[in-house]
Structure formats: C-alpha cells, structure tokens
Amino acid sequence: DLVIHIDPVSQQADYAALPRADLILVTHEHADHLDPAAVRAASGPRTTVILNPAAARKLGGGVALADGERRTVGEVAVEAVPAYNTTAGRDRYHPKGRDNGYVISVGGKRVYVAGDSEDTPEMRALRDIWIAFLPMNQPYTMTPAQAASAARAFRPRIVYPYHFGD
Image 1: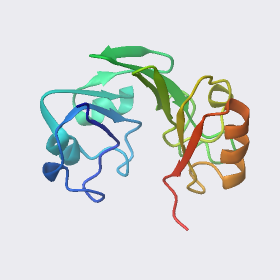
Image 2: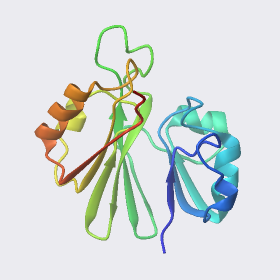
Image 3: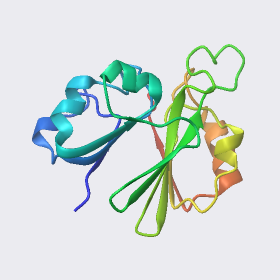
C-alpha cells in the first residue's frame, strides 16, 4: 500500500492517472529529474517530498536533505547519498556536494537509487543493498563499465540499469 515516486517528470508519465504518492524523492533540480507539475500531479494530501537543497529552492518547498542526512516517513527510512561526477570535465554537470542519491529502507530491505552520479567512493562503500538502480547516461553519469565496477564493489543483490539512451 506504499507508493513512492522518484524524479517524476510529466514527459515520462501521466502522474494524474497514477496512484498518489506517499513519498516523492527528487535527486536534483535538472528538468529531467524535477518537474514541479509532475510533483503536484503525483502528490496527495499526505505526500512527503524529499529533495536536495537546490531542488527544494526550485520547487519552493519539501524536505531538503543534504549528503548523509536521514529522514523517516512512516515505515520508510531515507538516507541521502552523495551523487556527483568524478571524471574531470564532467563535474560541471553534477558537482560534488549538491545532488542526492538515496538509500530507501523499508520492510527490512535497502534499495539504492543513485541519481545522476558516477561510481563515487560513497557508492562503492554501500553495504547490504537489495536492489541498486544505477544510471548509464553519458556524458552525465556512468559508462556501463563504471556501473559494473561499482556493482562489483558494493554487491547489491539485484542491479537495475536505468536512465540510459542507446
């Protein structure tokens, strides 16, 4: 009975036709991750929106979490994990200290959503992850080789590549 939307964007779905979210997580303020209209359409009267501080300013509200901060919403614990580029020249897309990935803990399981990130030391240090959603969207996130290397480092039970084109 729990509905979580992550980075809702109207171009990807009709959020008015989907169940209202109990929790919405926004990784950062880029338009392909934060769409205020989609957040409004996905929200109900009891929805909690958690985002990084820059996205909270752009949205005009929500619960802003910085790197390492945690928040519990009902039965769900959310931890903000740093999301950033490590390759020289790419750091202009996602600088260290601004964007979030999230570890979502519910029902004894830990799910990691990396957001737009390369394979950072913080990602590699994660433990006990059941499912990891890892982005492969060049030049903004990881190459397939980086995603595979990161997965070997922190060993999630299931890896789900996402946010990729060709």
